Image 1 (cartoon, rainbow, N blue to C red):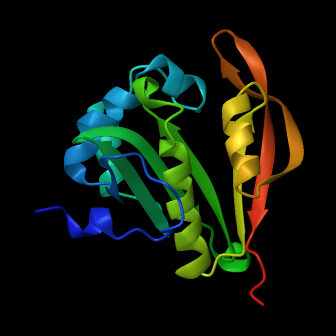
Image 2 (cartoon, one colour; image 1 turned 180 degrees about the vertical axis):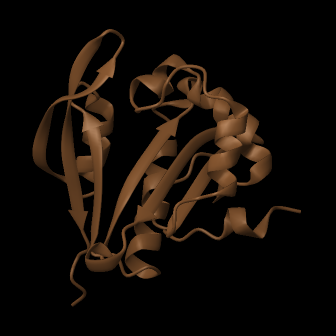
Length: 182
């Protein structure tokens, strides 16, 4: 029997690849998430360091930041994507930060779009968030294109944002604002 949490799509208008399910991450996902974060393509687009430990991933799952929604995408039972939304507090409680990555062997299949659309639907329709923000390396054309297609706009440029593979790289800061309801 399918996991009910994995089939309750928040955004039914987005096409899902056959066999894909999305659900909240679980403690038993730690090893698969750590393995995925170790992949060169996944790591290249994130702030992750090489060789993440299962212990650190497990600790992240066990002790999430307040107001966090973390999802995994599974294809034929294999974790192929990971995405999260972390809401801010106080005077920034209307906003949240997004992060995500897709398994190197499963990119360009719509998995990232599904994960982001689920997070956006949760933000808009359940969490009443007005602003979603993220950073993306300036050389990650595929991600930038995806974010723009979902309504994110560039707000700024961070010079020498991170040190990656022996050099500093720039990043864009992008945001999406909740559309006004008629």
